[in-house]
Image 1 (cartoon, helix red, strand yellow):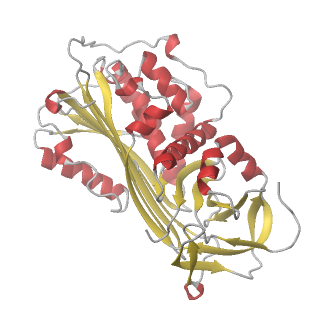
Image 2: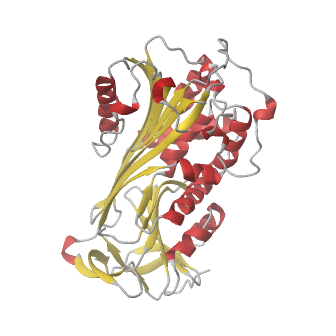
Length: 426
């Protein structure tokens, strides 16, 4: 993967209010196929009975688990953004590359039901008037460079991807055009996604972008008057002072459940179709063990077990900005082939000479008394091969120690954003 950029032929960048670069490059000695490549039934990997939102959520927890293994700090990502970026890349994968990506993403290729799910979710995120939420995809294609029509049709029809020709011979100008698009789609929260240095003026052929942005107002807002500095236990022995919001003694009821190890609270945004779910370990339970154990299945069970309760809430205000290179995490999940000389992405342009060189993700979230603002983007660079109590007693829910949170679309239970807060002011 540390090959010379002299051979770079395509940079595909997938953004989503987070950002993914995919730079595509040639493999020496490969042949160019000019017509669309027929599908091979052997390329399709059945994924069992997982629903499509379960596929995204399983990926979300798998990925969060891998990130937390090497990070003791805060984490914030958009699983939807990363998944969408990889799914669009996966549309062009073939043979073993496709099989490995299918296992990581938990979806089949050429699955019309999945395509319609992604299309429906895309339309919901862009048409729902209750929220300031949107997602966008775009293909930036080098002048006179042709992609397979079948690939373009899938991206256009099911992902809403628009295509534009761009002059990559001027990297500064090209990066400026793409970065302006990203900033516009993320309310200026994701800046400078594409570095001019990532664009080879002679050989960059394609940049694919996806962006997601969300701003939601709490169904029941916190009052700034009640925000005070409170102790937050970064460890059993160490505390810091953190501005902490509170909703105390209210008659409003919230969806809540708990286990022997966890408290789980749902805070809805206005419209009640999108909500934040906070997973708070009980005393003596390490957050890392919670992240290690939680999966899509038991998350769904926790959501289903919730009931309306009176809850006294303390929640820190915080802002997180994160940036990750995702190669090692995806390889650990099983996507080895896509990063190697054996990669096959011939479904994109008819060539068998492309592999993923780098995957980058950026995200932003701010949580305050009014609500939540979040954005994320992903870029994939492809290079040349060389059980609770339901009584009426009040619940005390005090986020004064590390916790996990997720922002979900409630009807499908699809996780749009997820994070871990170990230190709210770090």
